[in-house]
Each structure stands twice: as structure tokens, then as C-alpha cells.
Image (cartoon, rainbow, N blue to C red; front, side):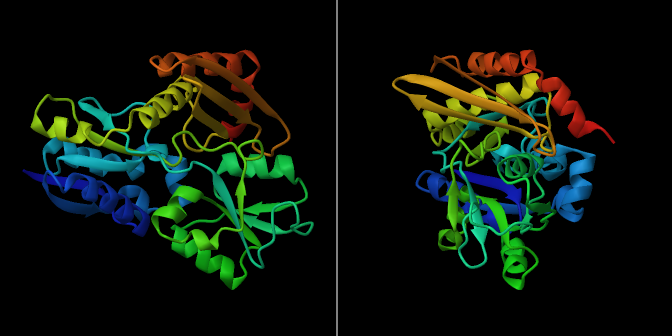
Length: 302
């Protein structure tokens, strides 16, 4: 069976395509189709101001048009609602969703000097960094992982924050200075997970994609994405969430922050493994009851 899988052409995206291809190859002849999206052609700041689907739109269109058979995305890049006709069919085994600090000289977050420069273009990371260390300067860090690591070594920043999963997939975990615990840096929705997206049609291709699914990882993703959908928050919103399986149940922690880290709202709940979306909606309602909408409005203000 011939299967064309598509995704972005960045080094990290290519590594993710290779992971999915290796899982498919025992049962299929796999062709990798790497694409340049609108988001890749814009700066990260311009893309963030324009819309979340800029990094997925062309890939989704190719999938709907039959140019590719399956799409592979970082789950955290996906909008909370996919285009009509598409669905997340599989979430392979999730990587560790933690954020990590990479610093010059191997200095941990707590040991960074006052007024150190930390690079991150994520409002979620910025808010939590400033909540922990309001004396730091958190500045924009654009470009792919390799670019940011090179600029760190050149001295543009004293440290940067990245997703551990990306470094693991690029085989660069030796760069990590410190794994940041969720108590200090709650991850992005879906961080560490891949999404295999297919057309909503029953057939041999869909069955093949389903074979890649890791049910616990998929349930975690469903809970986190339901939280995001209820909050109506995009990728530039300082929102975080992490679902984990605990003693046969699913536990979800969620949070929303003021952009400058001066305030944060946290909520947590447990639910049945079989109803992850209900759990996500429950935690989102808790956050809204505590005032999350007002914090998110601060992030959308011009």
C-alpha cells in the first residue's frame, strides 16, 4: 500500500515525519512530502499575529485535495477545531511534555544572574518565567530549534526555553541544562504529542493510521484540547494544560496567566479515562469561574 505523509519542511518537522514513516513502513510503502507553509514564510511574530493555522493550512488543504494521504503535525500547533472533513486519527506515544532550560555555562533558572536575558517567543513561557523570576528580561527568540541554539551560543541570550520533545526528536538532549517541573512551567496544550490527521472517511488508509494510536496519549490530548476549545484561546494566549493518567483515572491541570506573569489562575480535576473531553471542559469552566477570561483579554489587548 502506497501512503504519502505530509508535514512542514523544518528539521524538527522532518524528524517527526520520519518517526511516523518508520511506524508505518512495516505495513506500507511510505513517501514523505515536506511542505513550506505560510507560517514558515513569515516571521514567527507575524505568523502569531495572523492566525494559528498558518503552519498547518497548506498541509490540510493538500490532505483534503488528495495531494497527501496523511498529515503529521505537532499537536500543539493545531487549532482547537480542524477544518471540516479532517480528524485526528492517531496520537502516537507522547514524548515527555516538559519545557527545558538551555543556558550558557550550564546555569539553572534559579542560579541565573539578575537581569539575565532569556529567549522565548511563547507568551505562556514568558508569563511563567516572569512569575518565577520577575528580575529577568524575557525577549523574543524566533527561528527553528537549531537557529535558537546557535544564537544562544553566540551570546544573544543567557538562556532559552524549549520543549524537551523537540530536542529529543532532534537527538540534542545533551544541550539541556535543566528540565523545568510542571509546578514551575506548566506545558503547552498538546506539547510532546504528534497528531496524525486524515480525511473523515472509513477505509484501509484510516485503519492503517489508527494502528499508530497510543490510547493513553490520545486521551491526554483530547482532555487538553477540550480545555483550549472552551477557553477559546489560541497559540499566543498564555494558557497551559497537562493531562496525566493516575491510578486508572485521568488528571488534568490547567492554568491561565497575565502576560507579564503578575497573576495566574490554576485549576485541576480528575475524571474517567473514557471521558477526556468532559474533563477538559470541567477544568476550563473552573478557570473561567476564577476569572481566566479577564486574564486572556489582557493578552488580546492591542
